Length: 170
Image 1: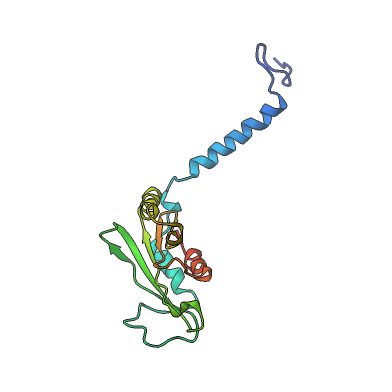
Image 2: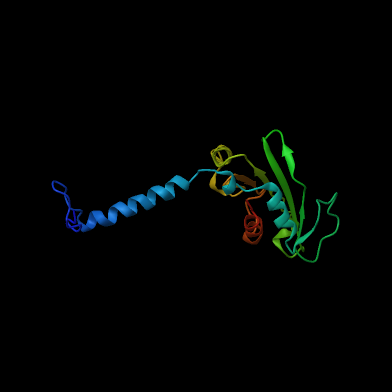
């Protein structure tokens, strides 16, 4: 009854040290890969939560303006409501950055966020949009989980890209 637990059963090969390391590593990799592209609803970004985050930013000054007649003295951000985009079959949030004439923002930056129902659709739409573009224009598009980002311009400053990406919320 109380056999030697340290020995392998008769006919079984003991694991070598290299296999002892490979098996747990393979299991860990399998668990990680199972989560990739899963697109569970808790992993998807939400248009309403993202919009709320953008509205909490210090740059936020209100809804989209009817016209931008005056040049602000600092970088400002306007955010639209969440709209259903029938053509894209998404929820959409439009942004409008404006800033002083001495910044690159003097030419208006107007990114749009398209919230797809799953990650695969967002990636497929992104690949379709950039497939025919040369490298200089690919910067106009981005994808993050289930969100397609249309930057409208390929030279959007990294600071603005960080604001937008930093506010993507589940």
